[in-house]
Length: 315
Image (tube, rainbow, N blue to C red; front, side):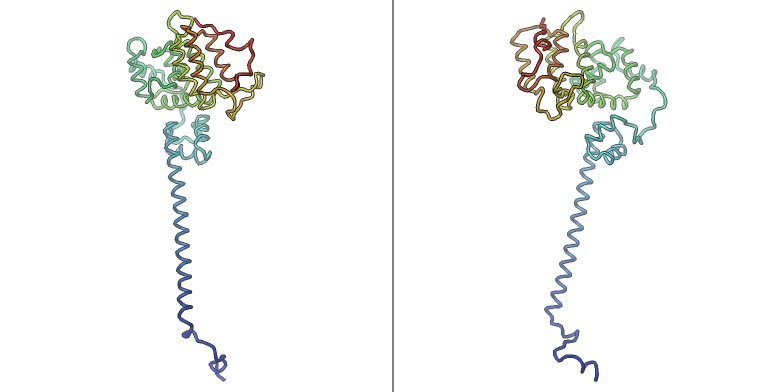
């Protein structure tokens, strides 16, 4: 008996399979191919989106720190978040350095003297030189970071810089070029916003910086102008975070539930203007900083004997 004779009577050979089944199989295979292609395109789109987001972060990192593209990419790849990467950079900017070789010698005194001469108006750098300096640093003359620069360079007054303060200040910060100065200024601004101890140093120095010769107090208008610059900057980065206790441990409230709020500054100015004082004493200036960090939102938790209000002297 042949193979053909052994087959059941209803057996259909390959050539006799119904046409509709063949078409269905082709449609199924085609759909699988389309779904696979769409899935791959979606994955590629996600990867492209992540790459673009990374490029935005890199650009932001470079803008804030002045670092190279390669350094920015390495910091972001390691620390994932932009804010964490920026903090890490300011803690150790040379940990991934590629753009320049680590400086092995102290900043050049001759270079710093030469740069001072470029800006000086007579013996010191004054208004015209300060404006040119701000242009080169790409900073507005009214930017709060200039108060930090004044602290670092020990400026004797607003808009005046001495040669000794210039040379010693920039050398202490490892700078003898404009690029290094720009990076340092960015670091000052970040530290002023996030570091409470550094904020206090700049804040206290600002009082002497703004006093006129022989004056014991800070003019009311000048004091309010300085507060308008310093307080928002400190609140933004946490330098003015609320201290929930006055003991030696100084617990800091990080959730923002307590502490100074922007509208309180307006209330403070209204109080001063209604009182009609002409100036703010050094004690008031100093104690007000402690008051901002220690007061609760209901203005209930404070020490009346130690409160700055009882010791406030308006001249």
